[in-house]
Length: 147
Picture 1 (cartoon, rainbow, N blue to C red):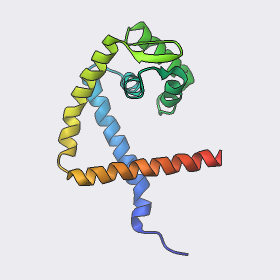
Picture 2: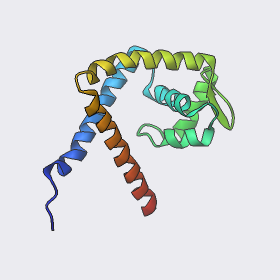
Picture 3: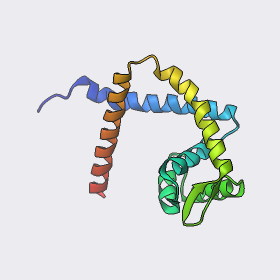
Picture 4: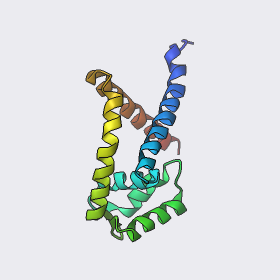
């Protein structure tokens, strides 16, 4: 049996620590704008996968996050609709107010993101993104095959 490289055992822990730290940083930036992370996530999902994102597809994606489940997702979408940020029954879109809030939050978050990432060569970041996307895709395929 071949001994796996040491970085195999470091990968999961490193990724988990990065996710935990980056999530805390994002939460801090969103708190400065009095925005719940779930609100940001819902606006981001609808903005990037719309227009006309199927409500069920949005719900499925949101329910996959750590802080949401089917009930809290329904409540979140109902709240965003009541606040005039999203609209739609079977298909969801951002309202003009929702688009403005999403754009404002995205621009606000972009500054700290740029500061953090600008210390690395662009080629390293491109490789990191492609690698993580490929790992995620493969893991999702294996998870689906096991179901």
